[in-house]
Every structure is written in structure tokens, then in C-alpha cells.
Image (cartoon, rainbow, N blue to C red; front, side, top):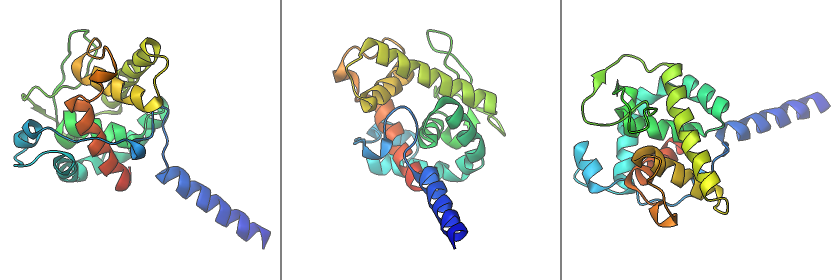
Length: 196
């Protein structure tokens, strides 16, 4: 009988780890966000904005992102980044991973950007996803060094804003509500509720 209880305990532990909040950079389940701006929603053909728009864009992108789920989990573990956040960035940057635009911004290290000019691709590689996630974690760590008294949630927001707006974008806590961050977090929360 004790072996049965051990197995039940291990299954419960495995389930809680897979669906739990993991990652070294804040808990996306507890973060409030206004979601996407109306401009972002319009670019994707929506006539509404906010969390509803972010969730709809995430829903549209979900079939494309599911095929990347094993790679997203691998990269998430490598960089201690919640897979839902990685999926949120992918959804925002390259609609569902269906297209990708390789480019750089200012500092020459950003991998994916949404400039409106996309190069179709059949697969985003683990290397590309690792580069994108590494840049995000570098931005978060940069915010941690610059603002050592902030909370993990503020570090995540600051890192996302610096990822979207460039390394000098975040100058104070007033800069933590950028459109990129708000949209990515709303999408990430959607993905977290749907298996990421």
C-alpha cells in the first residue's frame, strides 16, 4: 500500500510542477495588465483592445505555438523563464511563430522584431528561441542591477519593456506599463491557463 501512496504523491507533485508558476522572473498569474493597445488589436484585424484583444490574438496563435511547446519548455528550463512568457513574446513578435522577422535593434542583439515585414518560415529553431529568451533575461537582469529594490514582478515588467523598447527605455517605475509588456503579459496569462 505504501508504494501506491508514493506513486500518488509523485503524480501530484509532477502535476503541480507542470501547471505551477515557475520561472525566476515573477509570477505571471498574479500580475495585472491592461492588455493590448487598440493599435495592436487593429493590426491583427480586431475592432477592440485590452485583455480581450490580447487573449483573442493568443487564441489565434495557439495552434502555431503548440507545435513549439516542447522547444519552449526546453528553453524555459535553460533560462529559468516561464514557458507562458516565452509563448507570449513569440505570439507578439512573430504571430504564433508562423512568421519571423530576423533583425536587430540599436544594440545589435535583438533577434525577433515586429516591423511589419515578415519572412515566412516553417520553423523557428531552438537556437533562435534561445537567443530571444537570452536577450529577455539579460534585459531583466539589467533592470535588477539598476533597480535593486524592485519586486520580481517589476523586474519582469521592466525586462519586457526594455526588450520591446530598448535597453534605455526603463528609467523609473513609471515606465513599467509599456504596450509590449501589457500585451505580452495578457497573452502569457492566457497561455498559462491553456497548458503552457
